[in-house]
Image (cartoon, rainbow, N blue to C red; front, side, top):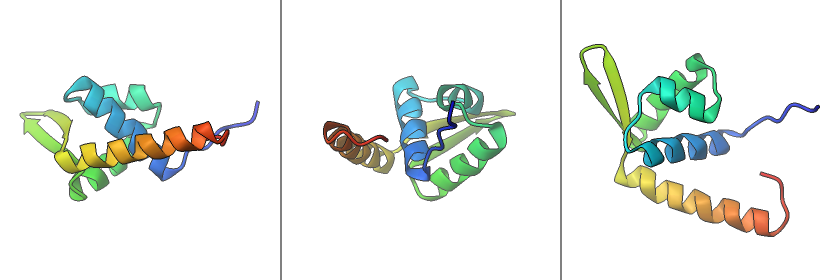
Amino acid sequence: MARRYRTKVTLYYEILRSVRDRGAAQPTRIMYDVNLPYSKLKEMLEEMVSKGLLAERREGKSVEYSITEEGLRLLVKLEDVLRSLRRLGLQV
């Protein structure tokens, strides 16, 4: 079975969708939703927070992420693009 690699754009989409669907999520939940090693997820979450796509809320040792308006706008655009690609029969 060939290993399927995901692009950074696909990972952004999956993370944004996970956080949106949960309302807010801790990193462990997101990690299981998108099937990504914690170290890679942590790196991507930090990047997405710095770009304004996610908001980070800390309470004690607990961290929770929520999607921002900018993140929602990007997610809608990505959903449209992925839907169009699938309609054309392209693998994403």
